[in-house]
Length: 204
Ligand code: GRF
Image 1 (tube, protein in one colour):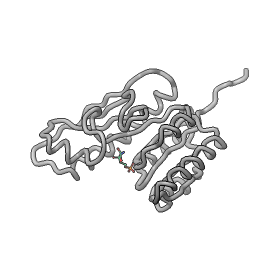
Image 2: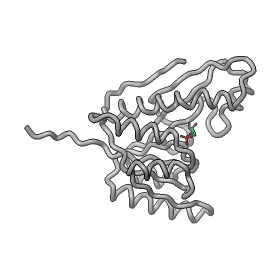
Image 3: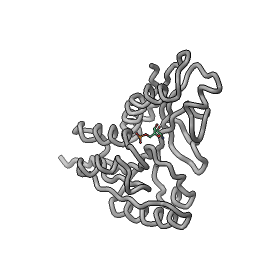
Image 4: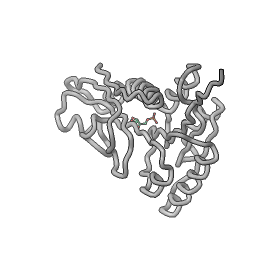
């Protein structure tokens, strides 16, 4: 019997450490029947630590530093070419610190997911842990969502929740949340690629 099953080609975009990227790559590589395979890691920073892990794990990388506005246009154009060459089906943004242009999102025309360290729609943008503390929140978390043209917006695919205990610092919140982000992103990506429509909620 012919098997028409094809794994989806996943590209992961990073700017630095890449721990979420590592979690996604490890998950895809460890499960024979995972619906996705890591095909490409893209970075706007040629010195991103995560690139070393990707290369060691034989995932192709494409990196180009963005320093000026013109660089971003070149980065996006070249990235689109590579995505096409590699037949990429989906992009996962994982600590990617640049905002992709509307033109890029339209030209790619396939799904782009993102992980954001807050319970969206609260605390879009940067310094989410500090802002959650300052607002006196009792809960905090992270969200994986599909991206649109607006920053940190788009359909929510999964969220992970933590409680904020008295005298917590932003650093402590970050450390508590990061491993949960990894679990969340792995689960969301699997369900999304399976097209199950299932959303993920984890409470810790
Ligand atoms: C994570 O907290 C992620 O939610 C945010 O940036 C951080 C990236 O960490 N978008 P890493 O590069 O995945 O380790």
